Length: 192
Figure 1 (cartoon, rainbow, N blue to C red):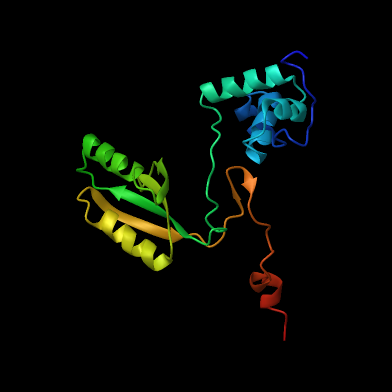
Figure 2: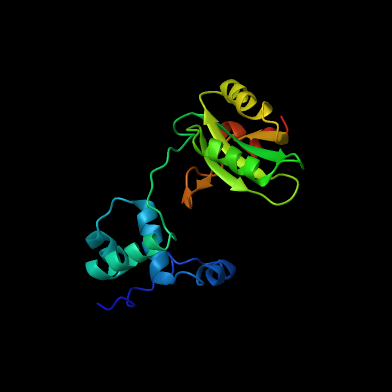
């Protein structure tokens, strides 16, 4: 089967036309189906991958490897924090205006080595960084953030928002909306 061939399974290709336009700059529909299949099971063989996306094993391997070499996909495992019952939060960090580029880079490098920090993103606007962190409890998380952030001379302020529930992460549905009966909005005002 030719590498460009494959089944056109519209249920796996992005239905939002804006997202399609953005994604098509770097990947095509077959690449997207490869991504979706590997997102479901990153350990699947190239033979199984080929079957899932309508390519030969060789073509599937070639495309997967090309996507990995370009850095467009990365096959990793992650801990689903809410399933592990870990407290986690988004922390927005604002640097002082006096902070030098090298101080900021050193601070980011330091955070990169911290095991409890699982994501660091640069921001534009009031805040400079988004730091995502997990810990055993919210109390432990608060203490940890105090130790890591309050002592730094380059941090003007930080704001922490604990995460209570994650519905979608890594382009996967993690929980169904409305499954938690105790938080059903229709139960709040039933008139009784």
